[in-house]
Figure (tube, rainbow, N blue to C red):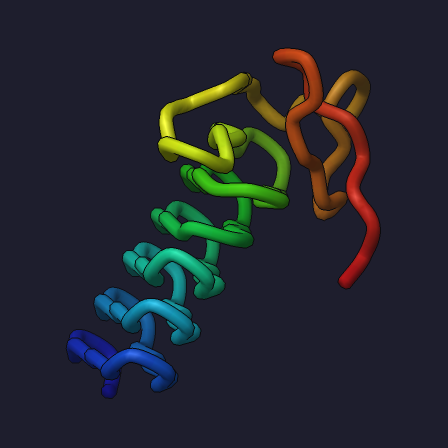
Length: 130
C-alpha cells in the first residue's frame, strides 16, 4: 500500500505499507510499515515499523527511533532505535500465561540500538541474530 495506505494479509501472508500506513498479517505472516506506521503480526509472525512507528508481534518485533516494539510468545525478541520503548513477554508453554516480562527504553548504554533482545528472568539479554 502507498504512503497513507493500509495492507492486510492472511495466515501465512506478508503485508507492507508506506510512510504513515498500517500493515497486519496473520498467524505466520510478516508485516512492515514505514515511518509513523503501525505493523502487527500473529503468533509466529514478525513485524517491523520505522521511526516513530508501532510494532506488535508474537515472535519478533522491531522499530526505529522513538517507536514502540512489543512481542509476546516463546522465543520472542525485540529491537529498536534510540529512544524506542521495548516490551518483551515470555509465555508458559502449557497455558500461554506470561511467565516473565520486561520493558525498557533504548538508551545506548544498558539497552543498545538495533540489537535484538529477549527476556530471561525478568531482564533483557542480547538475543542471537536470526
